[in-house]
Length: 150
Image 1 (cartoon, one colour):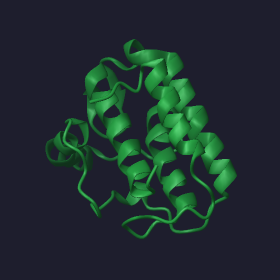
Image 2 (cartoon, one colour):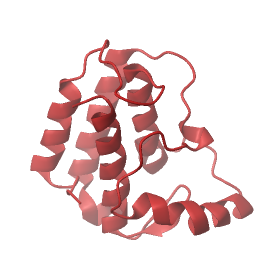
Image 3 (cartoon, one colour):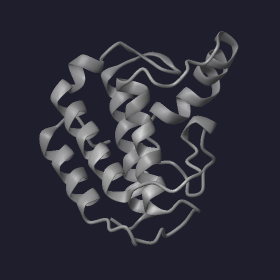
Image 4 (tube, one colour):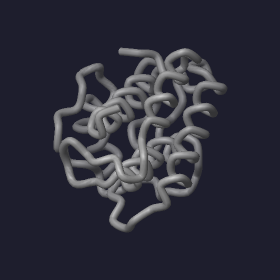
């Protein structure tokens, strides 16, 4: 798995994002490019902001038991995988705004570094190791950039 906490890898991901245009079509799935960028921003909102309600104890236990292993491992997501309700983007978004937000979140994540995230509590999965945070961040964005051919 590539390391999103490495400056060179962060810059590579940002370069891929900068290849997107507001009219870039998806190769699979239903999301438009603006919704995909907003969808990817949710990952960083959950990790860095306090704007989403936390799951209750029962839901968090289910997420930790069933979803966490799929999200933090190194196995790529399958095309057309279902997404959690918190990640569903139903309305159109401003492409440039969402693109800028995502690039800023990537830069902030890279600046904070893996040590900041190591053993840090996630919104839904409890404490994660630096590697688990990396896998979650990298494979999600890589999946969606591949979805749009960049």
